[in-house]
Image (cartoon, rainbow, N blue to C red):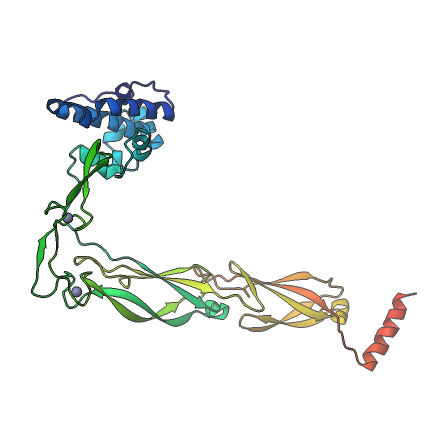
Length: 367
Ligand SMILES: [Zn+2]
Ligand SMILES: [Zn+2]
């Protein structure tokens, strides 16, 4: 077994090298050792070298992996990451674009990895879970308070009953993909200089395509399906609360499970109440004499009315808190509070008697 060389040595940089220095060092070495730049008999050697410098770059250009490496050496990396993980997430595109490899082709991790002959990537189509669906459900504040049941109508997909998901017309089968000649791979490159293979865009790597597509699903293997579903909304939901209903999303591929349905609630704004979290806010008008002398006022709550005691000499816009008169908390049995702001009710129409009394009152203040 060969002993792995130090990553900093491989790139020829100091332990204290900046990200930029590491990138520059890698770029320089990558040009020098690129497998496509050496004579055929040296290709394997160059390939190994290229892989070595690329691995060093992948680790040292990632601050997490670099600090693991600095602390624990190769053991900190090899014990924690698979080879695939080491390369994943590294943005090689900036490197290769700046190297003048432009002119098409991507340079994502998988393509880079392909150069190394890494066989981790499975080319066989595998069953895949269907996509999730999001359904936006409008409810009133009262419904959010009490909880409710809502019937939703939406579309998802189901495996095509005519072809059972194969996408092929009954009695027909698959044929070799004419684009990739059955390999599932196509070659691509950076301007012809740097070639690698990528998944065939015609057959998506399967190597075969449908001979004659199913008429029901046009070869997709799935058909649209209308669904009707009643969902229970618990008390206390707020804007953006998500309720997951398993297995009601889009149909899976090749026998994979169906995706999920995410019901997201949107609580409509209320003409009287404002809501912040579990608390509710309301403004109410109180007659001037009640504010002066004290008394009782009837205040609306979300599920009825409540008597509020107004102390003598209450000032305009004073806020009273009514405990537990807010919204139920969705995660507990607690309830929020209701905050009541009392505003002075200044009458615009007065009858004769009220006018006389107020004139008398006015005089008492003018002394
Ligand atoms: Zn079909
Ligand atoms: Zn193909």
